[in-house]
Image (cartoon, rainbow, N blue to C red):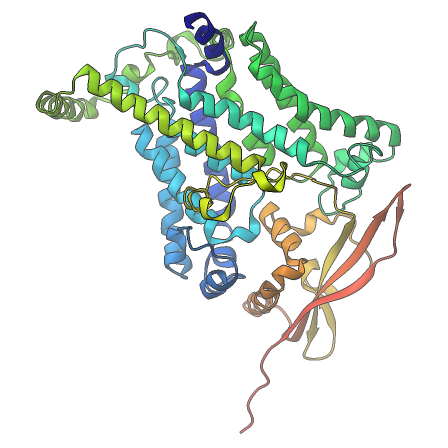
Length: 512
C-alpha cells in the first residue's frame, strides 16, 4: 500500500512556489476583470441599466444564489463593492492574509457574476473555481507577505486533497468540452473551425488569415478536439511527472495563444493561462528564480522577510505575542490536529466528487444525472459549471446589429455607428462594434427568444444615454435591428435578413 500511495501521490504533487505563482496570476486576472467591468457599472449592474434588479429577480434569479451587488440598484454602491474587490485582489496578489483574501475575492466574484448572468462565459466559471479550490490550497505559503512570520518549508513539494481537486478540475475543463462536442462538424466533417471563423462577431484578423485554407481548417478542427480529449491524460502519467506537467503547460499556452489570435474570447485565454501555472514543476521554478529575478531581489522562499517594512515590525511583534498567548491557551493535541486535517481533506474530496458528478451530468445517461434536489449546493457555492465551448456544434447564425434611431425631423441614424446615417451595409469589422467581450456576450444572449424579456430595457437604456449628450439630435424612436446571416458550407453565406428585435419610443409630450 505505501508503494501504491507513493505512485498515486505523484498525480497531485505540486510545487509551493508554483501555487504562489498561480495565486498571483489569478489575482492579476481578477484585477483586469474588475477594471473591464467597472467601465459598465451603470449599464450592467444598476437599475438604470439593461438589467434592473426587479427584472433580474423575476427572470434570471436562482433562490439559492447570493449577491451583495443585488443589495442596491445604485451604481455608487456597485462602485464601492468594486473597490473592495480590487483591494482584496491586490492583497491576494501580495499574499497578505491570503486565505481571508481568497475568500473575500471569491465571495465578491460570485456576487458580481450572480448580479448579471447574461454577460458570463466559460472563463468566468474557471476563474470562480480557481478561487474556490484556492481557499483550500497553501498558495500563500511562499512568495507572500504571510510567509514572513513562518519558517521555511522543509520541502517545496506538497500534496493534499485540494491539489488533487485542482489537477482534476483542469482536466475536467478540457475533457468535458471535448465530450460535449458531439456535432458532425467536429467529427465527420471537420468543419467546426470553418464555421467558427465564419462568425463575424468573434473572428479576429488571425482567423481571417486562416479562413481561406479549407484543408488546414479541417486539420486544426480535429487537432483541437483530440488535444482537448487526450492532453489532460498526461496529468495522470505517474512517470516523469515534471516533464509531462511542463509539456502540458507549454502546449496549453500555445493552444490558448492561437485561440486569442483568431477568436474574440475576452479574458478566456488569460484565465486559462493563469490556471495552469500551478502545474509548473520544481525544476521549472528553479530556472525561473535563477533567470527572471536578479540575485539581489530574488523572490525565493525567504522573500517575505525582506519585504517587511520597518513601520510594520512592532505590529508584527504584537500580533506574534497575541498569537502565542492564544495558542498557549488553546493548545491542540496532535491527535486533534490530525482529526481536523482529516475532516478538511474529506470535505474537499466530497466537494470534488460533487463537482465531477456535475460535470458528467450532461454527458452520461439520464438516469445517472444529478437530481434537482441535490443541485442547491452547486448553486449556493457556485461550483456549477458547463464547458460547452462551441459545443455540441458551432453556431451557423451570424450577423450584426443596427441601432436605427429616428430623429424628430425624420432622419435615420445608427447609434452603433456613432450617429452616422443608417445603412444596411455590413461594417468592415463587426467585432469592433462591441465595447468589450461582456457586451458581445450580452448581444449574443439578446438574440435568444428565452431572453426576450431583456430587449426593452436595452432599447430604453440606449435611448436614454443617447439623449444625455446634448450634441446628439433628439430621437423619437429607436429600433434594435439584427441583420441575420446564415453561414453555409463551401464558403457560401445566405443573404442577410432584417429582424426588428425591439422598438422603443419617447413618450409623447402631454398637451396643455
